Amino acid sequence: MRFTDLLVITATISGAVAAPTEAKKRASAFQFTGVSESGAEFGNTAIPGQLGKDYIWPDHNAINTLIQKGFNTFRIPFMMERLIPTRLTGSINETYAAGLDDTVKYITSQGAYAVIDPHNFGRYYGNIITDVAGFGAWWTTVAKRYATNEKVIFDTNNEFHDEENDLVAKLNQAAIDAIRGVGATSQYIFAEGNAWSGAWHWVSSGTSEGMGKLTDPQDKIIYEMHQYLDSDGSGTSTACVSTTVGRERLVEATAWLKANNKKGIIGETAGGSNAQCIQALQGMLSYMKENSDVWTGWLWWGAGPWWGSGASGYIFGMEPPSGTAYTGVLPSLTQFI
Ligand SMILES: *[C@@H]1O[C@H](CO)[C@@H](O)[C@H](O)[C@H]1NC(C)=O
Image 1 (cartoon, rainbow, N blue to C red):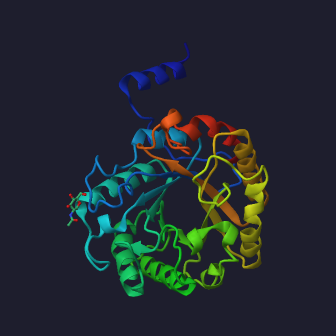
Image 2 (cartoon, rainbow, N blue to C red):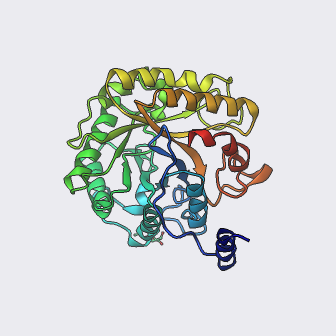
């Protein structure tokens, strides 16, 4: 028995987690690869909702397992209303925030990036956010909390949709200004656009126009686009349109990023656990690799403790050890991590 085997056994017996080390990535084409760690945004009709009943925070051990797989970026969806209840200019609910703090601390202490993701679709209590200053105030309060953690990434909002492109651009600029305004100057900001931030509609939806004009004194904006490979691009079917659909759906956005000298990330993607989807995903990630001058990485949707497993589990579940995608898709994507 080798010494290293002994260590493994000891760790298994004691249930100890590997000592926190930098989540060093192997030589990779991408700066960011990872997973959305879903749970705290669940039960979004229950506000504030109850921990363990309506929503749940991500599981440390699952995150650690995914880090061992080479992932270095974890996006944490949560609800704006639960973090700052009643009004955008209000104050933090410390009970809910404690869960977010704990998750961020765990991820970043492993040397990985934690993406703060208000998973609100540009809405607050169900209404489109039109109060640009209020949105800025919300971000001022939140960014202050994480201003000194360099491994935090701020995601302006999940999937704006069915609103004015101009409003979406203004909200993004307000978030950027608020984040930089509290001294969070070293962190990346992931900016999401209108039309569900879909890569395939980035230009044709018109969202690119205002988004392209965002300014950041730190020049660390990364455009976060989402791309699913089912027929309507919603990420609700296990079927992918073709083996080449992934690559094809990124052509428009890739050209835009290049022409405008911008960086992008696919902040959500997934496909079913089947041969056609796996080929489509590999094709998309190969294409991103070929264009890694503009594509900084990709994040799978999604992991999290409540997705279940097996036949009754979520079709894209990446939660170890038995999520559908964790067992059926991830082994075919390791070369892109
Ligand atoms: C703060 O969050 C906790 C936990 O979700 C909840 O029980 C409590 O009602 C919340 N307070 C407010 C004012 O929303």
